[in-house]
Length: 193
Image (cartoon, rainbow, N blue to C red; front, side):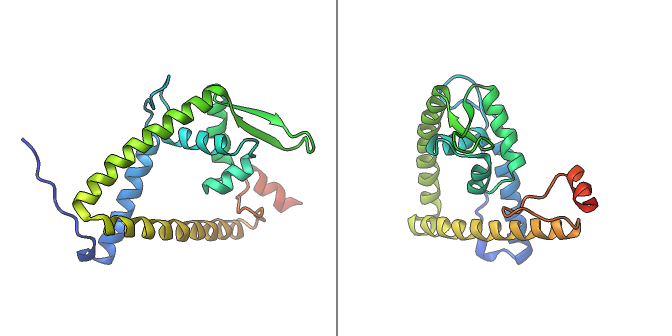
């Protein structure tokens, strides 16, 4: 028996219901980002991994710091994903010729193939999704949604940086320029210096 879908009308929601809807969406999206699946090639990967491969493939010789900045993640989180990608043979690291302290990232041939599968997979998925959304809400609403989503993302990045800076002040540690919070074991060392 097919369940009837309830029509969601965002304009009629209270402020709390809107916040709750955003939260539920973010949780569902984050849960989805951690599920592994096939993107048409060999093996299964999470969306987080394939999007990281895409950024590396599009920017050969990118550093973890720059990758973290572009993806609005901490260097630690990016390093963990890069390590998994390296272990899977999708990314290789090398030292920069001029500054040997800089580690540069590059997609391997396998990583470039996965990126191509990923791009085709998402092109098809977004076409289906947009078609369904356009049928429910109309093209103008869909375009407005993407405008609002872009603004929301920018505001969330700003708020995240504010929260990271506040956290640094609370622990009386200095943040680096990119807002990184030092690991707890380094926080004590900085206070004792």
